[in-house]
Length: 392
Image (cartoon, rainbow, N blue to C red; front, side, top):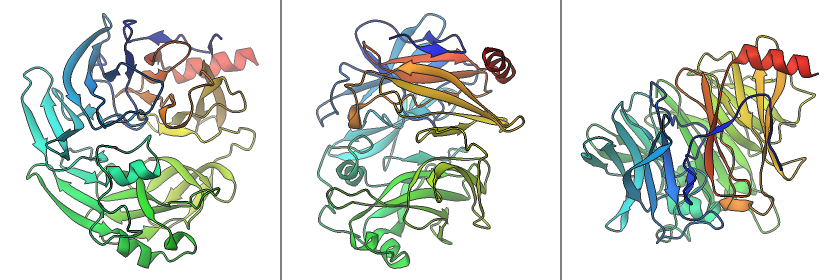
C-alpha cells in the first residue's frame, strides 16, 4: 500500500537489512546544520526487547545515508529508544545498563571519550545542567514499550514506596537526589480508586528554562479497566506541586514556553488543549472538525504551528501526520503513512514526527512491509497550506 502525501518523503537510512529508528517525538535527532541524524540500529522489529538484546546507537550522515556506530546499549525500548539525543555539538547522551545498574552516558562521537552519569535519565534540560530520572523497571511493568526490563522493580510489591519516585540529577557534579516520592504523591492526591492502586510516573519533561517540570502520574489499572492519568507540575527541586487535572485521560504533550502546555487530553472530551501552569486555565483548540486520534503534538520552533502523528484509526493500515497553523486556524492532513496492521502494542512503530533545529525538516520513523526506517521531508508551512487548499 502506497503512502499518500502532500510532501516528498525520502528514506534517510540504509537498506541493509537492519532496523533503524530514532524514537520519541520530543527529542532532537538532527545536528544544528542538519547534516547528521541520530539513530538506533537493531536486528529485529517483531517483538519487544529482552535484557539480552543489544541496541547500537549512532548517526546517519544525510549526504550518503551511511550509518556510523558510536556505542552499544542494553537500556532501550522501541518507543523511546535509549533516550538518545544530542548533548552538545559533538557529544550524544544515551542510557545504558552497566555492572548491574542503569546509568546515563555522555559520549563524544568523534573521539569516543565518554562520561558516565550516575542515573539513567527520562529527560535532560535544554541547558544540559539537569536531568530527571525515574524507575524504568517500574515503567516496564506498567508499559513495556517505555521501560527497561533488565531487572525486576525493587519496589514491585509497593503501591507507593517512600524511597522511589522522581530524582533530580546534577549533570556537572554527577549527583542525584529523590525530590518527590510515591508516598508523597499518594497522600497529596487521594482520588479514589486510583490512589489505592499502584502508581507510576510515566512521562516527565522540563519546561524550556528547567525552572519547573511536568509529569504524568498514572495508576496500574485493574484487569479490564483503563488507567487514570493526572497532569502534574513541580519546581525543579520538587516543591510547589500543582495538579493541573484530576485522574482522567491525559496523553501526549509539549511545552509551548515556561508556563503553557499543549496536551491531548480528555478535558472533558478528547482533543488538543492548552493548560496554563500558573493559573490552571484550560483552553481548547478550535479543531472540532478533526479527530486527531491521540496525536504526538510538537510545536514548530517558531511556535506558529504544530505537527503531530496519531494512531492507525480510522484506517488500521495508515498513520497520519497533521499540521495545525495558529495564524490561519487551518488543519492539514500532510501525509498518510502505511503501517502494517500486524505490528501493534509495545513493539509498534509510531511515527513520532519531529522538527530539525530550524523547523525546515521533519523526520519520522516508519514500518511498512519491510524493516523500520527513518524518513524525512522538507517543511515549508506556506507551501503545504497552499497545496492543501488547491487539492480541496
